[in-house]
Image (cartoon, rainbow, N blue to C red; front, side):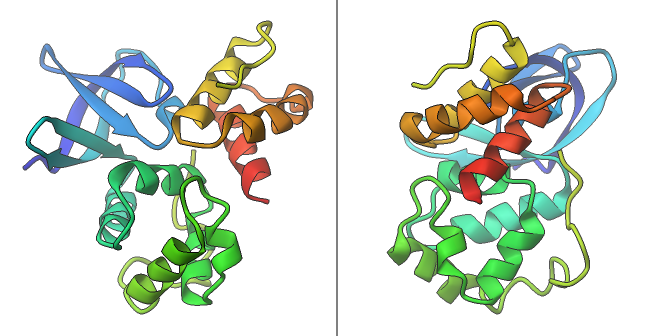
Length: 201
């Protein structure tokens, strides 16, 4: 089992990155691929390897704490790796932990594929199991990082594609796209973060 990969980013796609480690390209599914940039600067991505009868899949995280939160989420009945990534794509992990601790089901049901039953299960399974990650009043735990865009803004288009890849309904993404067009984002990560904020507010 891999703990992390240390290498350069060879490619960035809406739902994954390719990490070049000594000439070997690893396809790593990640919640927010656009927090990374193609280049020669080495990065460390913590990974979780899921093995099934038909595939071996790597899931990547910006730091060890994010990986630990992912592992807790996928241990909840009804939460698979894709759903966990969609939840972690929202950079407000502190708000997520607070929602779990305070039984805020309405916050949790804003994530794609999470209904009231699954949200209740998340609270039931994790409410008393997050203290080892970070206190809920300690500020942000992490530093962040088919609908179509407008065609004139490739960063916005990539962010819209990433939101759809995370499982948000095309209609919901299309509804917030006009607001994203008015948003003064510097890069895809900015647009993606703003899109996640709009979708979960």
